[in-house]
Image 1 (cartoon, rainbow, N blue to C red):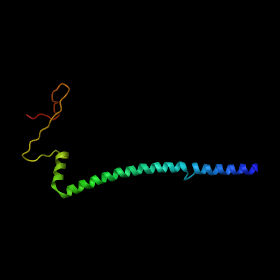
Image 2: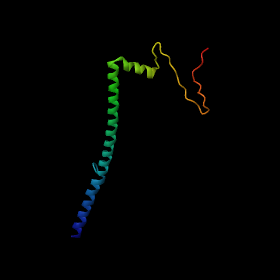
Image 3: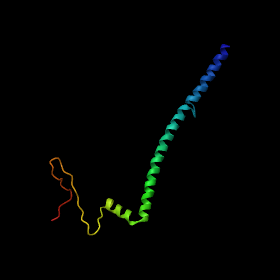
Image 4: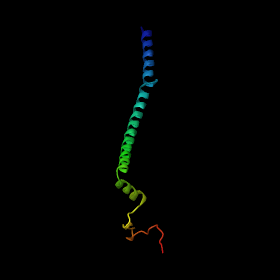
Length: 105
């Protein structure tokens, strides 16, 4: 009877080892689950980014307002007849900081 119990304990230990550490075991299951959660979070971020890009594309296709906004913000364009003003932040002495643009004579 003791031999039979010992054999059953060894078999149980081998099965448990396979369950915990073997292929498709609990350790691998936990790693795959964590990887899946990371991938789902990445996919969510990418879907949100794609949605914003699609909205930008539709705006650019639909009218000139989006194109004008893009040109003004990214390229610094101004309309004819407009005057461009740059407001410089003050330094610690209360003076306006000098512009890095060269002065024209």
